[in-house]
Length: 124
Image (cartoon, rainbow, N blue to C red; front, side, top):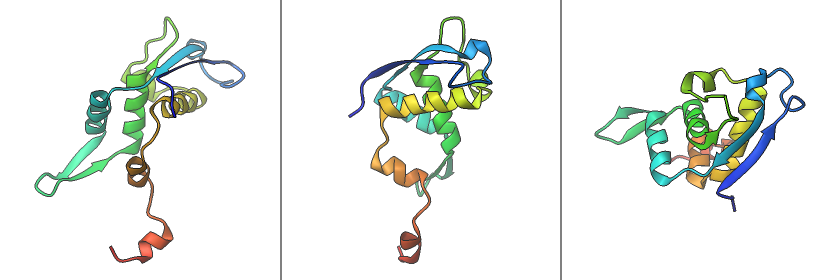
């Protein structure tokens, strides 16, 4: 069970190489159904509209989740461009917080992961 909102602090101890403006108190909130669908569309590319084939870029989906769900510390604006250049430790912490408040469904996990060796060996 995930909570609807999570308040947390990113410190220099957790992100020793992060710029000072990326440190501080953040808030991650659970996104709405519409926000999630919009983020999925922005992170996807239509391969064949007639067949309903879509390719999702997991990195873009994760970035969308951070941009939509995270409120940064006061004085730090989390734009798309800025989110793409976050310190790696800060980015990992923010993504982890988003996963905690949003959860990940079984279908999302299957869609994001490669098939196991057993699934590859089984004709579909």
